[in-house]
Amino acid sequence: MESLTFFEIAKILISFAVCAPSGHNSQPWKFQVVGNTIVIAPDFTKRLAVVDSSDKELFISLGCALENMQIAATNYGYTSDYDYTDGKIVVTFTKSDSCATDTLFAHIKTRHTHRGSFTGKKIPQEQIDALKTIDNKSVAIFASCTPQADFICRGIAEGNDIQMSDTAFKRELLSWMRFNKKHIAQTQNGLCYNVLGFPSTPKPMGRMFVKMALNPKSQNKTDGKVNASASHFCVLSTNGTSPKDYIALGKTLERLLLTVCGSGLAYNFSNQPCEIPALTEKLRSELKISGYPAITLRLGYADAPKFYAPRKSVDEVMVE
Ligand SMILES: Cc1cc2nc3c(=O)[nH]c(=O)nc-3n(C[C@H](O)[C@H](O)[C@H](O)COP(=O)(O)O)c2cc1C
Image (cartoon, rainbow, N blue to C red):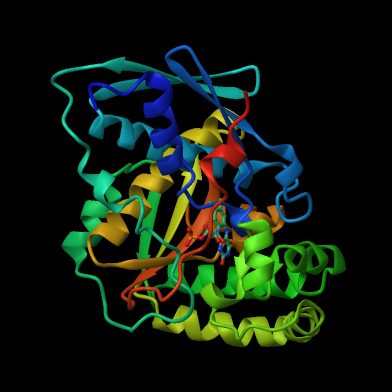
């Protein structure tokens, strides 16, 4: 590693940053190496104008990428700090002989969002307590079948009723679906048939099948099964509603997801209640959350995935 230039190290760090999760696997980021810094900028051409009109999830995704980058830096002997200015995240790196590798580094490449139901097994309370300590203020976790978890499940169902009746939401979702190997190779992003457990189909046929499945009744049936199999539900909240707040939450979210996957647990998103302002407000008051709910997750146990979501290459997400 000694012989690598900072630019070469930066490309390695970016390769870890892009492993982060993002809404619809849109990968809404661009990276630029400037001196001993890496600038992470939002790529607004990838914004999800309907489901994420305020760009909340976009900035949370950038925070996840930032966290991966900062964790990876420790493995290469760098400490790092960041600032959010002029709409961009500037990450500064300092070489340090005493910097120990963050243990979450080992899980960056294998973290994944579980698709489908969980096994139904309950997570021990000590493990839940350990997850909460990642950030007691922004992480709230509720066991399934409690009034709070039931309220979240009702929020998911109400969210499906609204989103799956909204033509613009469905059109946007459909535009991020990838229906076969060729389609994935062309885009290297999006929600892929194999990850979701669908058969490969020609694009027009896939679009037709998915269009038929995108309705409140069928989505609620699917989500009902997943909800019933989850061990816990987790709500992550921000202090405020600025990009800075969302980036900070993205960092916490990524630490939580890496910890979950690294401890043999699984998670998936059920973010509907945080995507519709009226439902978010209800969630906030019913669950007595002092901040702003931004992410809803389910936690449980599940098998390893057969397929991982694709990512664009480092060169494609770098700008000169
Ligand atoms: C801010 C944010 C919101 C998300 N919301 C949802 C969601 O509501 N439903 C869902 O199934 N996945 C959601 N995801 C998960 C993404 O679809 C997933 O991260 C992406 O497809 C890449 O897959 P991976 O996480 O397995 O790498 C969300 C991810 C992020 C970062």
